[in-house]
Amino acid sequence: MGFTLPSSTSPAEQVRTLVARKEEVETDLDAQLSILKANASTLHSPLVDSEGFPRADIDIYAVRGARVRILELRNDLKALMDAIAKALETVYDPTSATTLTATAPETSAIPFARVDGVAPGSPAADAVRAYRYHRTCLPRV
Image 1 (tube, rainbow, N blue to C red):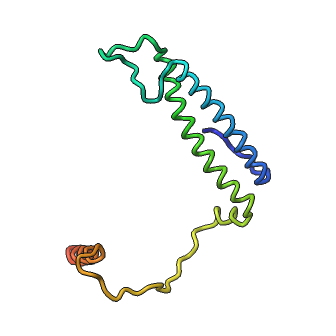
Image 2 (tube, one colour):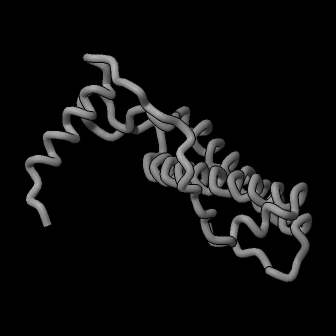
Image 3 (tube, helix red, strand yellow):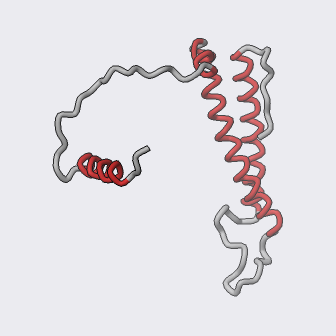
C-alpha cells in the first residue's frame, strides 16, 4: 500500500489523511472497473473462446492488468478501512491509543469457574480422554 502517517499530527488529521488515501484508491478502482466494462468483461469471465483461443473481441492484456490491479486495490482498501477504524478509535477514545502500544494485560490466577462433571460422549469428555491418553504416553522429564 505504501502510506505512512506523520507522527506529529493529531489523530483527527491522521483520519483525514487516511480518508483522502481511501478516496484515491476508490477512484483508481473505478478506473480499473471501467476498463473491464469497456471490454465487456468481468473478474471471472473467460479470456479464451470455446476452442481455447484468445478472444479477439477484447483487449486481453488490458483486462488481465485491470483484474490484477483491482485485486491489489481491494486489498489496499480493506487495509485502509482497518487503519481508519483504528484511527477513529483514537479520535473518540484517546485512552485507546495507549492500550494499543502497551503490553498485554496480566491475567488473573483466580479461577472464575469450576467444572464438577463432564457428560459422557460430549466433546469435553473426548478432550479429557485424549488428554489422559497423551499424558500417559509422553515420557516423564
